[in-house]
Length: 140
Image (cartoon, rainbow, N blue to C red; front, top):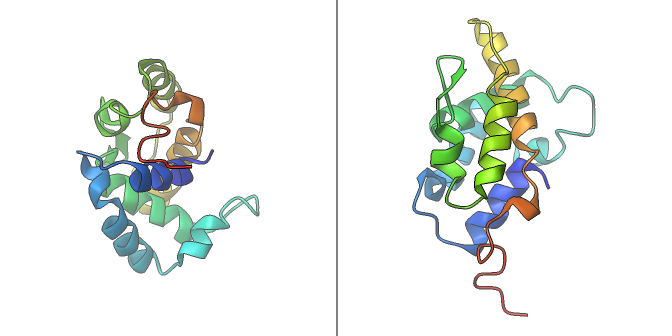
């Protein structure tokens, strides 16, 4: 499941006591700043390169939810933002894998860096969601 899809699903299913409560307005703000639509974000994997604007959307989004700052992953950010939702093993895996991604200091490189981080975080699987968080409020 894609990182963004996972986050959207989790936002709908549970009320989150983290900055993800603000993810909707942040997403909208960042899409406007990047000059893209939700469809552009949804279509990001249809080509090898989603384009500079989509990548910069992810820079804006990840900065505003507290994952990256100054072209670096904030230490412990993945755990702080998603640790109460995903398993400790998922946090360790994402931090070990994604924290190795480095960036140059230019604006263009910061957008590419954020894109690479978002791609890495899309490695979160539905099986990584803590039990009880997957089906909460689901009536079927």
